[in-house]
Length: 284
Image (cartoon, rainbow, N blue to C red; front, side):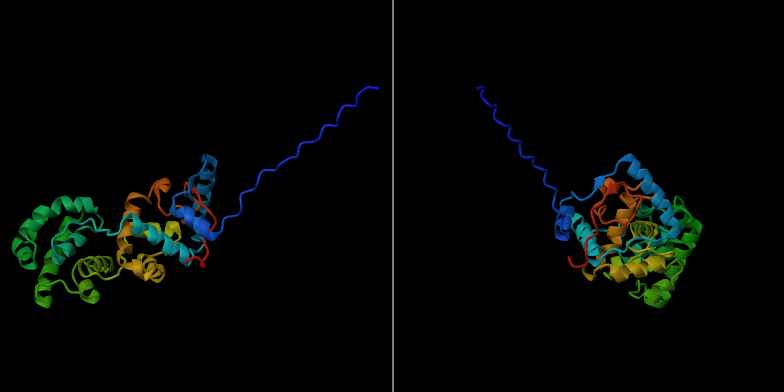
């Protein structure tokens, strides 16, 4: 009688384990280690660009949670604990002059002209003695230099006549000076006097609107929204972090999302990286 072949025992099929859904705490931990944002494929980036174009018309983005905002500024602080403004200055007066000169100009351009100027005139009295004609010659490489020279001489006179030659620690008094608006006053109050103000320039305006952190149609609207959402402990330096971020990372033409420390938190649909699910308010 022929031997019966043993029946083949079917192998047990082992299904691969699906990755467990990450908790908000785990997502936050991954983000802090830089593993949360990955570069998108070309198709995904093109689709994101279309969404971004539509969003620019609608101006609607998902809201940041309290925890996400705190985490964004925690990262800014970790990367640059003591940020500084890039305008060269010697004292509150030269800071005020530098900021007035920087309107519709770059900080780098202003910094090329001001060393020679401040060697000759670092007080209101010296600036008046220098005179408008000589001042124009020293700053002629800066845009709108004629109007700016007139304003600098005018504010120097007013500082002497009304404030004893000192830069006032007061918003209303600063904004009453020739050539000084809200943004300039905010910069001076922040840098010279340590006030937690946020001066919304073109960079902060772009970052606030693009990321969804503070969407607004005017610089004042963006400023008010930022003042409302930035945690108090980060408010003093928020101005510098956001300007530097807009100047060197979240640039106008093609933002460097792959180098951005808050890319996974950003709500802009046109960003070049993939992001995890939104971090909830419970994780503070």
